[in-house]
Image (cartoon, rainbow, N blue to C red):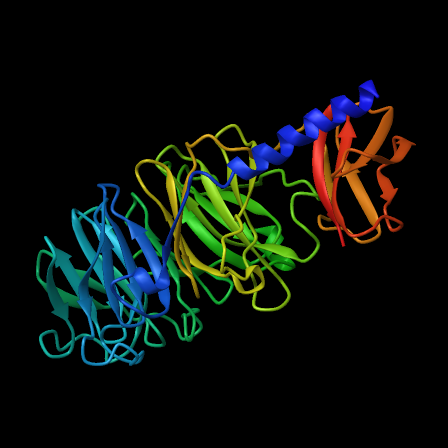
Length: 421
């Protein structure tokens, strides 16, 4: 009876804590945004504002409310128009966006267009990547026609000749950055490219051995000019500024990702932490988890919460950004913008060596345990606190005989929740 009461109290705490983990979230519903459409990109200016690029315009959140600052008022459903915003970057206090027809520049909410009508060297081609350098110049990548730069001093467009073998975005968007050495980096079509203004370098397995069997999902430049390279189930750091090329993988345990889950996108906050979203490999590629890899190389796993009216099997994050207060802004394809305050009090699943990692979750047959702890006994309880399994430690537990529902694994006086399906 004493054991039952202990388990019941602990389970009640877990359930209450799990409910409160919904706190720290804000949801801006799609219908409440000033522009209706599909959100392609979202970007913080680290100064209190967040910009949302959509297929029919650009919206801005100023810390208290959303406003439309650039949109197609005549036909918001016309996705193939100059108001289609695919990428946004903030450079030298000015907001720049790549569109289907040229660039737009926004300063104090005043919009200037840069297209064929006023810049004859601008390609008549959709822009799918954009980045600002340390001088305030804007580099951009066309759909199929190559690398270009807006020279802010000369107020002119510079075209660069690149080999035909250079990967370009085509129907996808490209992740682009300029480093402190005046190099342009981007990822497109599962490749990583470096351009120094003259020479294009396309990275392959000879540069990064993991590329023999892996494709690049995304990249992120860091404050020391190193490049975080996100692969499907790995993440590494690449450096080549000291004359010695350096590449190393971060440790990712096998149980961190579910079997049908892969990494999708990576961003860095102002403190140097890496944030990563994942996606399902089945269906529409739904987003269920996101992760933080901190400066001490510790992982924290977060789950997107359940909101009324949100169908999680089609919940798909298209882009995200992190503001100066370490709030994460997620642009979701169907439901709008979700904001998570990572500094708010919440219950997170800390993925560390002194924790027990369980997978898959949900589980149908065998639950796998991965830990460095010394464990003698394992107990599993139902949501009512009834013990349903007790066994000596083994890394695989047969739970196929359990009814579908929520269960709790008790290991060394710590509780871990899982779902039986």
